[in-house]
Amino acid sequence: MTHAIEHKVEIDPATLAVISNRITAILREMTNTLLRSGRSAILTTARDFSCSIVTADNRLLATAEGLPVHIFGSHLQTATMSELHDDIQQGDAYLHNDPYSGNTHAADHTILVPVFIQGRHLFTAVAKAHQADIGNSFPTTYMPMANDLYEEGALFFPATRIQRNNEDVKDIIRMCRLRIRVPDQWYGDYLACLGSARIGERRLTELAEKYGSDVIESFVEEWFAYSERRIEHAIKKLKSGTYTALTHHDPLPGIIDESIPVKVTATVDADAGRIVIDLRDNMDCLPAGINMSRATSTNSAVTGLFNVLDADMPHNHGTLQRVEVLIRENCIVGFPRHPTSCSMATSNLADRVINATQTALSAAGEFGLAEGGASLGAGTSVIAGKDERRGDTPYVNQLVVTAMGGAASAVCDGWLTMGVPVTGGLLLRDSVEIDEQKYPVHFDRLQLVADSGGAGKNRGGAATLIEYGPRFSGMTVAVFADSGVNPAKGTQGGLAGRAHYIGLKDLHTGVEHVIPSFGQFEMSPQQRLVGIDAGGGGYGSPLAREVERVRLDVLEGYVSLACAQDLYGVVFDGEVADESLRVDVAKTQARRAALYSQTASL
Image (cartoon, rainbow, N blue to C red; front, side, top):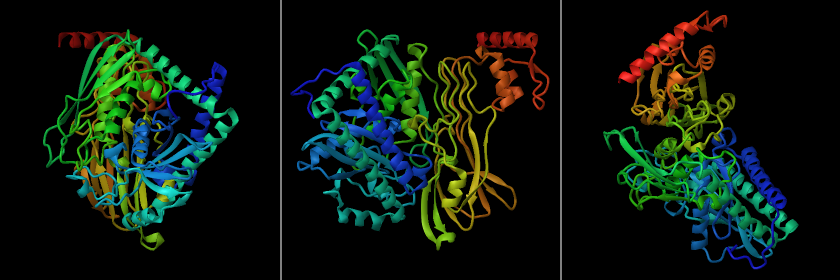
């Protein structure tokens, strides 16, 4: 598809809405196909995958409910496919997981299916899914301490043809099956991705047959123009200026002993309806796996912006036309030089870029957010071992059985089940029962932690405590937790959320000791991993929170009585147990006045 349309057709608003909703329905069908046919729990319960549609000239058209970290980069991958192959045909499919040529990180296997209408390549259907295992030197897709990609050990496929004439390229399949620890699981997930993309191909073909390719091509241009008008209007509501925020990732022992600064500068030109987000003033890449790729640096900055704009705004090429993200080569939040590792490009630093972007923009009006809990801790660890129930069959899977506290915003409390910032609340939490059926793991506790969300006019999302361990024999666990030294910060007077914690408990003695936040270790059935993942930051002064909301927080267990009095300045009488708790108005007024005086004197 080219920008210049040979036979332009006028698209009325009703047709524009109908076709756009039809494309959204196609994406949802692609999503449901992958969700129902995937093999690993990371796909079928956590839904760590995303579907999108890109035009043939590599412009992002539609994303539906894809994870932000996945979809704002699909067009970079299709561009690689177009660049490397001059013989793209109907019936082709391409496997792309190369972060040096447009992908996010090696663990995200992407299937690209070119869609031909009457012999012309008009679209590419994209299905991207996080894998349980990709052949790394350790049984995890995350390698934070890897010096380079060779130490990672993953297989890399830069838009490699994996199907021709709708049949597998057997050499590629054999390479993956020989290298990946759970080959049947991988192949099942591959087929699910392929089926999802092929469903997109079929439905887009039907759509074009119904309306005609001229109408569809005209729709694309009008949809982009409409989307650009939407974001222009939203940006004009912000205050012009340059806004900077600084956050810090926790140290990496043995690589960098100090916290890693991440600086974001956002320049808003409200009159022109444009924003520039600059990530260049950050340190060079580290000899570790946490460096970001071009796709993740760009999409994280864009996600931080979209988090503060209209919730129903289209996310596509049209809206991206009004946003410029400045990054540089060999920067931790830019793009790496081969073979610099960016194994964890979709998590830790990406969360920090999103947090800093949305926090910086909180100064541009009543639109921003605090920082969200950023952590891949105990509840999102990667477990691996052999399942005695199935003849010692190997298993590898990333758990998603907890949720970091979401950031409080100018309009509401932090989302309890937000997940990590890069997922935008679209990553689902595992079913504990399904995880226990699929893998030899046992969960003992999963509960909220009081006083863990940052206090504020709007409170940060609460942290979650989780306890689990192997059921029958030893199990390898890999954790990659941030926010232990640097918890999620509040903004506009809001307080920080709770820091993460990871400990290992001996079931015989009950003794629990702290373990490192980054690394892999072996667990026995007589041990349990105990983790508290990070809480979200608060927005606005806690003394501005409505007293009735504080009372409800105490009754629900989000806030303790002590915290209600000490931080929110709310004094009660009555009891929590019988729900007779009532606000003592006079004492509350006096307490808040005293706290206001203390704050003013600082």
